Length: 283
Image 1 (tube, one colour):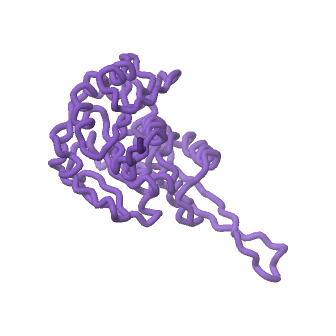
Image 2 (tube, one colour):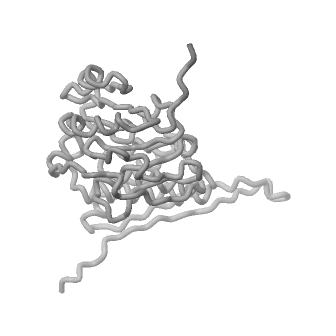
């Protein structure tokens, strides 16, 4: 008896309180050729893991417990750990794909690229993407410090571009529809802060991180370095969001080179990231 070859695609989806949606979308995921499906039950109160194991035994289930709040980056990273495919496909539980989704999406799997849907797609679809496993690993996967609606997808794409991976646009008709959800539903297991404030936090952090990585030539930061950076961003978010105070963060980067006769000197580069709320045009 020989082992089955690994599938080309690994479809990763996550669920926390979205089982009704998953019941509509999972059959299409499972029907895709040359693909495995991984469902991450992220402490879902609806019994997602039990449902999937019972009704879709071919699907791999990753069960996460003790997580009352939903952390999308962490959930997706855990799903990736169970994959075997060459190309990762990230889809939310509310996305109904076409029966021939993988063919229609037309992702150039042999190219050094990542694929997203057109910029005019619905906001719920913009977090869906195709990316080669080796590129995903090279940039460290999703950043699990981005726990709310803080653009964890844009953060991943930024690091892929720094790695030299080009962006390609997937065919929009590969997706039939996105199941609508209210803002209340979106925030049920997320931070209760204003969505714009959450996005602002993510963008400040991403800008600081990108500036640091460009200056140092890195495409991946370890968790300690990321936590230190976020700890410097967080105290300023509230005052910036209300317009009370501008944001300013300066990072000092030690010079890594030996400077010949100047061995007893220290050199560094300073990078400053700034942001401000534009003055109101009223009056």
